[in-house]
Length: 109
Image (cartoon, rainbow, N blue to C red; front, side, top):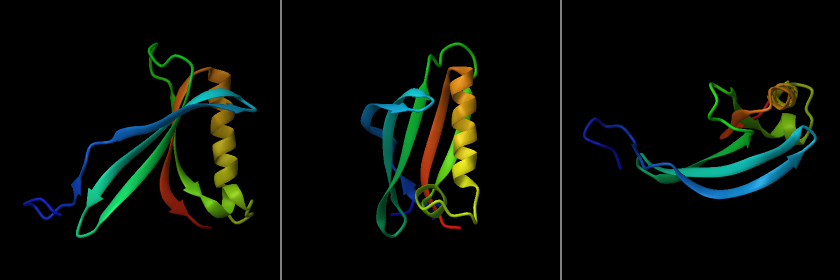
């Protein structure tokens, strides 16, 4: 479905899951989100937020990361996605607070 400007209709973002995630850098609070998009066909976009510490005391470190199957799961040497995510997570842990988001834009290198 498109609006009267011919743009895709996007529904509100909603939280669908929440859990604690212990990592080598600390225990993150993990939040799963989704939103519906209609632009001729309907599909769901998802995102994952990893939160560490109290976010109310000023601007936290923020990392927006796109998923990369070949780099993060298979360890491909053709990309540095896994290294980038590890460096950002380490910096966030050293800072002690953050908001880190992983979007489901599929990356293949």
